[in-house]
Image (cartoon, rainbow over all chains, first blue to last red; front, side, top):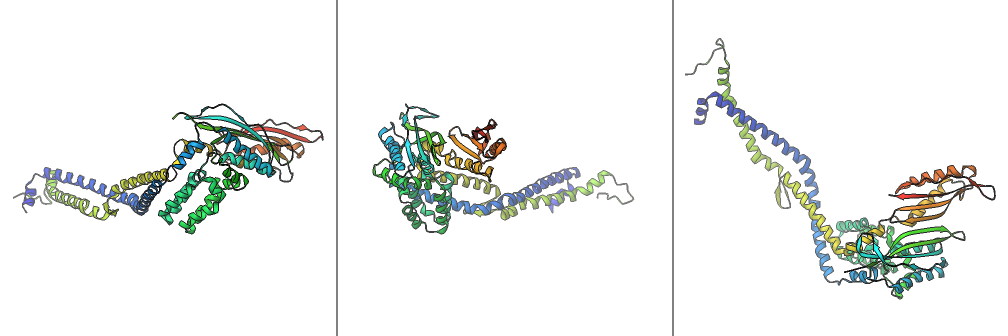
Length: 292
Length: 199
């Protein structure tokens, strides 16, 4: 009542100004209301639908990281040691390298897939590209081989330097396995980790055993089909092709695995002397570590 | 007592102001009060949602989603670091350099398939005699001969080059020298050599 009387007594101009200010404040509040409602419609509603899945994904990832850390703590860094000793050594073990190429040549000759090989020419080490801690030696060799022999030689150069199953998989192939794992059985990360760190030669020599062991830990059909699609479309298939037979058996027996890192510089395939035979020439960079 | 103008009295702006001022201030005051109440009580009540055990408005939700995404990326990266540690560092970079180039066998099979496809009715119309591949430079040099197609050998060669240019992953090709020669059996043929630049 007092407020009403005060208003009535107030000067009309002052009342108009107060009313106008109040109306301006109301308009700004109405605009803010509209903004909030629009924000809720455009931002919050879609986010609310995706946030639980993201939270679940993060929880699963954290759980997997913990499990993997525990598993890793029980393993000694054997992969790193083998990389440093055999794959990227300080100095090329020439005997080991030549034995490996010679073994490939003899195996393919025995299988009538290769008729002759040239001299193997290895140059002096020189700096490699943008890696200051790496040097490379050019290695040049050529073979007379048929289609299968040529493919075996070229696949071998692709595999030389890879050590584990994980090395032979592309990022998107590993991502497919992770995604399938997260959906089916997040704690299976340890089994997947063991599969990915499995020696590539061991896998290629008995891929069924390695895949079966993984599938026993992760028996869902969805993971099974993801694993099948990855193993049948990746370098793992090439590894089986090259290492499953005599060459793989002998490289294992003669302890020539893992092979030093070979980076192809150029390949050349020319028609050979007989139909279906080719002259396959290669120049590879044999990589070594320097310094450290 | 204030004088209230009758309809016969002349209505000045001052009178109008005096009559409108009070209802106007009351209306706008009440409107503001309602909106303030809505802003502070109603709107938060209806627009906040509980996520992760915390009530959040839409702005908080956006920043929470951004934080979650960042945390997921960190956790994924940490997982990769633990599960496949050798993919990082020097070996990882060299492995990437090696495997990022297209496979020579795949390129060769694509080139040979195009060579076979050009003249379906004539076997060995386009003979690829040599393929050289430099993976780091992403170049492929193809040499060969077009034969058994009579005087059309240069046209068939042009078709072959166009087909190679349209292959997936091919950025460009050089144009070969178009020549038609006659061999010992008086057959026309077109030897060729050109370079493919991959993407």
